[in-house]
Length: 548
Ligand SMILES: Cc1ncc(C[n+]2csc(CCOP(=O)(O)OP(=O)(O)O)c2C)c(N)n1
Ligand SMILES: [Mg+2]
Image (cartoon, rainbow, N blue to C red; front, side, top):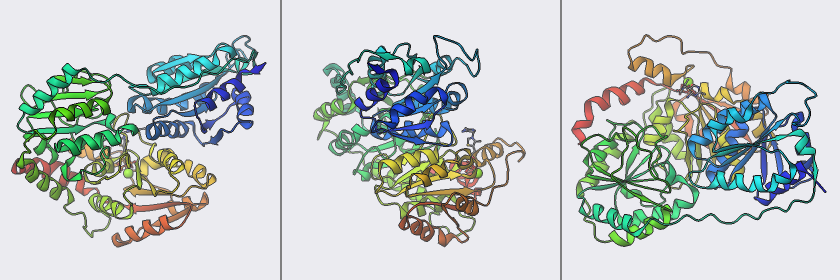
């Protein structure tokens, strides 16, 4: 005979799970006891939301679901933002929540909310486990659903009496590799013909191109076809090498320098575009022909309605497409010229010495201290646009940002996950003073785990991005400023090390020293956001036509 919770933990081990993130409640105590006897590590966090962000990031970086756990009602609802983050961001994850017993109701309705109903719109699947014997099949099915395209979160509710129920030894189901069919030859022939007919084809790498297994096939496609490419925010860094074909990142929907290349194209091969992202360009009645390449077909939107599709395993389908077009394309010399101008504009003022520090300089200085494989994990705020536009990536998945739910508070938890997975790489969380405070308690988790991690806080004492939008929309400057704790002493109170950058030239050496040391470091730097309006509004509105 086996207990339900032992079966659950054995089923998780069977899926290769190494860690579970979260905060147990009394309804999870059977599971906690089963975990105590297993090889899986329980990583306690200080808020369930952070646990869900960590588990989602595990899924995002490895392709295998991260697992998080919470109690019923309040704890489960605290996971919900993380569920939405994984759902919109297509990150495989399993959320396990406790529940009161289902066969008895000794505490009446205390703490009971319908968590499954709450999770249903935020997940790919939400199920209650009603018998211990069903656990092996439910867990296997949940991992399958979470991992298969389009990946995402699965919620399982385990009532405490089911967790404690004894059952016959139910056999575990061994996982098997998931393989997708390749795009049909007719679709590949059609796409090849359209590309060969085009004069100025351009590749767009969207969010789904960042799936870990696509790094090699995508890089090879770009190298073989030599078609210039740009990416969406979440498609950043999905190609290794080939950076002489990179024409920029679309952080805005139109009117940025990269759009001079997009507007020049007569065909866009949109690889892995997911319309959860803020549109990287706007399709209209005229514009270029768009071919969508993905594991799943495109959602048809007002601003995205591809003319043709190549649906199937992206890596294998692109290899077949490259077979059809390699060596037959005439490179368009204009792209090269545009590329030079775009990248030159983007790097302007990158070495500006003003203090407080301007965003371009922050991005530039961060790039200086990050090795090629160093990982930058962004929270959400104004600086995200600057990093997306200006930060150059050379290795896949080295700039993690969220342009799907675009939630604040995920920067530090995602960096903690990256540091756990890649202990030998430099990992930097970049947070605004607003977003950092949404999950700053996880500094304790990072210190407790003995991680080497640096957190850069950009201080403007405001919800800067909204303040900027308020100014752009010509509203008076009102209601969006706050004061901050002393971040140096705040860091020290957790047993971390705090640094305050007081001169612009100190930013690089401070970050570098923080990385050379071990442990958790918080570096706070004041940011001058006057550039938001100067560049992202006035300059772009005035100067883009000049480039085109
Ligand atoms: C959880 C959540 N709440 C609110 C928002 C709306 N929002 C987007 S950016 C932003 C301001 C971010 O402020 P901060 O973290 O200080 O970064 P800054 O823009 O000042 O650099 C807000 C409130 C959001 N995206 N997520
Ligand atoms: Mg701020």
